[in-house]
Image (cartoon, rainbow, N blue to C red):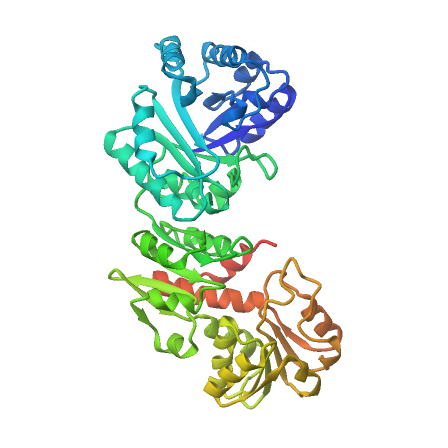
Length: 486
């Protein structure tokens, strides 16, 4: 289930938010501590969905300014008014929790006993869980701060323990590294996850918009414990469009599959500890080359390129492929043939390597230019082509110019990898940057009479090849294109 926190600061505002939230929520959480003028009778009478009454004290991350007696009195009032759930912090103590259990006995309300750690995900979660369980609360809630993506695994293990005990639990991680827990924990057996009403209405760090949980990740639609997990491994990952296009494609073909972003700092531990959860991966900067060390097999083309952007799990083996080469060649050849054309490629990183091999295979006359000429020279030796520094672009004639660097990517969208003066009418200009969809380089190229190829075309074509490798189905490319968000 998806729970939407109501975080307005007035009763009037909260009434509006309740009405809006009920369109996407299974459960509401009324954050009493946010309200300056809490009219609980009016608020509880207005809602049609079940409601958690929460009045968080400041040392637990809340905003309630009054005394402890005043705080608990408002929660007692919520219970008498029929709130389906009352959230009590474990730090309240057994006496308070027992008093609320007596108050709610025979009534509608169930007790959620919650514990938060805003600094880390500690090692002793099982001990904390057991201590909270001893209170006799109906639902245990444990929320921690993730300092690495692997912290989520402790939360996943805790949910499995609670399921084995027959104990209902809400468990997740906060922060950017904990974002996946907000998506995956309800699918792994947690009672619910929290989603904000809209951006800016988050009640905790890393909270995802409820509509995104519902529409992109299909929480409430996917089969619990029976879904196939894919995702993007990289750092950073927040600007990726993969979550939109792959999840829309899974939905279109009615596949119980899910794609999430994995923000990874320690690649070795991620590949070791998450392997059991994964069915496949996309790989982005800075791991396209490093990740080859953790694979059982690497496709010969990817091995020759020296970079992997796609991983498929087969018979518990992780196999690496490179679909960038497919995406790039198809995107260019939709506009012009490559054979015998003079091609200047900027960059020598993971994407550029794939493109270079694709150009060479198609018979293009390739020159590789890079900010660090030695890197371009190393790649050029492999492909028996020319190389040099970026400054040489002024003296080169090109039929096709390809930006294989990240220059021009949002938020530095005003930057260009080359001076506009090198762009000539009739030249084909291909920018692998796809965010923004139309870069400044492409704008300048069009203004000077060049044919242009957007990074979006390459991105979609390589993603379609990934999708086919993972699922065995032809990717619905136009459906995926319609899911792009800028």
